[in-house]
Structures are given as structure tokens and as C-alpha cells.
Image (tube, rainbow, N blue to C red):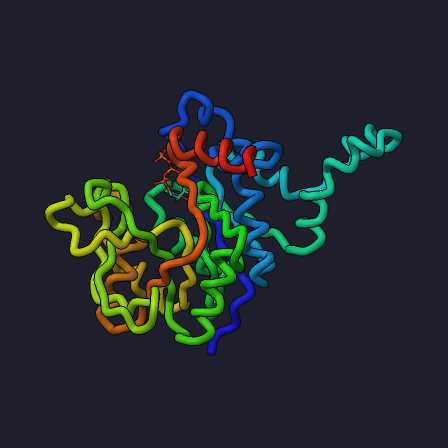
Amino acid sequence: MYKLTKCLFPAAGYGTRFLPATKSVPKEMLPVLDKPLIHYGVEEAIDAGLNEINIILGRGKSAIEDYFDKNYELETELADKPKKLKLLDPINKLLARGTFTFRRQGAMLGLGDAIFKAKSMIGNEAFGVVLADDICDSQYFPSVMAQMVETYNKYQCSIVAIMEVPISKSESYGIIDGDEVEAGVYRVSKMIEKPKPSEAPTNLAIIGRYILNPDIFPMLAEIKAGAGSEIQITDALQKLAEQGKVIALKFKGKRYDCGSVEGYVEAINGFYNK
Ligand code: UTP
């Protein structure tokens, strides 16, 4: 049984769908109301017990590193304005609850490569992966990562979070096939990255939440660039799935795809109207 206390945030991508904003602002720092996207994901991970936060960065992403650090100058400036100072509470609370480690990806060769570059940070342990541009709001349930940790503890396999999508949207996702072993839980037999609707085996799409066992690293080492000329995590997971070592969990809650402008606007409206 592997230790599970780390969570990885691959945040090195260029965020081209948000250009020109992402020319100088990391996508993960775009705000949903008063907090940046990555704040929500880190809070979800820490709430699920994964308090060792590891973040993969690229050039121009140092605002993320600054966000997860104290800002003494600002706190000194606001020292006699307690109401304003209090606005820093949400991030200061996260800083007190977690540890934060950063490394650069170097060349942005895809999500699979970003995860592979985290090998030395993770070691021989299981770890969560959160794509910060997917915000999961599970108001009436444990957080999505907490649901996944529960499933991991039961099956001890790598876990992917899935949801049903219209089959016409299959080219935007990794799609799984498998046997339902209990309600909403599948033993994955097949995973395909961005299949055409005619080639999608199901409408069950992977979203930006994973728990991976360290046996993913030798698989990633073998992977060549796939869909979009990127090293795809789905291709490495497919190799584990062939050995029956991947479980998919249909999570409870609402996911916002903040990697697209449309989903981002939906998230802002959803959180504002809560
Ligand atoms: P996306 O496919 O959303 O790419 O990456 P992107 O660059 O963030 O955004 P677009 O598509 O150009 O608008 C999914 C996740 O994987 C990370 C991204 O930061 C994002 O969290 N990623 C992607 C890396 O860390 N490194 C990469 O080489 C590629």
C-alpha cells in the first residue's frame, strides 16, 4: 500500500485558449470571483488530506509561486486596515495547512511529460493530480478528490474521475471503456485520447482529477508523443488499464471546464449565484 499525501498540479501549459490574457498572466491565476483558479484545486486537495502540494511550472508562471508564498510587504501595508487584511485569510489558511514545492517542466511536451517531470518530487508514492482549470464544486458531497481518495483506499489502483458528456464532444476528452464493478465505479479496459465520436467506445470522459500509483512512471517513460503531438497521460494509463490497474469513478458534483472561455464564464456565474 502506497502512501498518499502528495498532490501534483501540472501548470506549465501555455493556456492558448485565453490569449491574449495568458500572454503574461498564467491561466491558473485567472480569478473566479476573488480567488484564482488554482486556489480552488489546492483547497480541494488539502481538504482531501493531500497537503504536500507540488506544482509544475513553465516560463512566465512565477505569479503562481508568488501566490503560494507570504507577502510581508502587503501585510505590513494593510496592518492598520483589519478588514482588508482579513481578505488574505483564505490563502494564508491554505499556506498554513500545506507545503508547496515547485519545479519547471522545461519544454512543454504535454501533460504526460509534465507528470513524468515530477518523478523526483513524488518518489515511490501514490499521488493526486489536479488540473487547476477544472473546478469541481461538490456542494452537497465530499470534494471530488476526497471521493477519489475513498475509492483509492478501497481499490489501491490508479483512479481517474469521469463524467458523462455528449458523444459529439468526445474529441475534447480522454474517453474510457470498462466494466461497472459497483454503482459509478468502472474497471477500465480501454482509454482513448480525443477520439472521433464514431470511434468513442462510450460517453464517459476523463476530467482533470487523477490519483496515480508510482507504476505510472515506467509507463510514461515509454510513451511517445500521441494526440496533438503531446505526451499523453491517457496513453500511459492505457498500459496500466491493460493490466486491470485503472479504476474510473463517476464523481458526484459539478465540474466547470475553466480551460475554455465558455466554461470559465459558467463557473463565475455558478459561484456568484451560489
Ligand atoms: P491543456 O490541454 O488545457 O493545455 O493542459 P493548456 O496549455 O493549459 O491550455 P490551451 O489548451 O493551450 O488553452 C491541461 C493541463 O496540463 C498542463 C496545463 O497547464 C493544464 O493544467 N500542461 C499541459 C502542462 O503542465 N504541461 C504541458 O506541456 C501541457
